[in-house]
Every structure is written in structure tokens, then in C-alpha cells.
Image 1 (tube, rainbow, N blue to C red):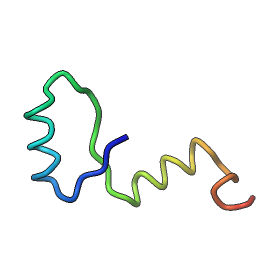
Image 2 (cartoon, rainbow, N blue to C red):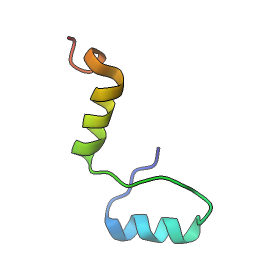
Image 3 (spheres, rainbow, N blue to C red):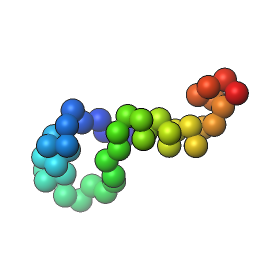
Image 4 (cartoon, one colour):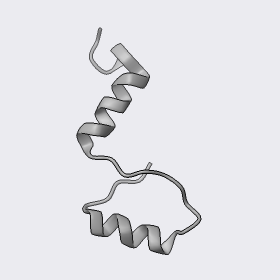
Length: 45
């Protein structure tokens, strides 16, 4: 997992690493995905 400070930073990194696959996500989207994967571990449920 990599974190980027902006869309431009992500595009620049992808240009420099064309063989790397993946998708960009906001912090909120990443948290929601983590919640779906890890469930109650993130919230104490």
C-alpha cells in the first residue's frame, strides 16, 4: 500500500512505475474497504 499527497503525485508515481497495478482511493474509501475486510476489528464490534 502506498500513500500519495495528491492525484498529481499518484500520476507521477504511476508514470515512473508503469508495471505496478492498483487503484487510487481517498482515506474515507480506504477506511470503508478496511471495514468491509476486517469488520469489527476496526470498531470493536
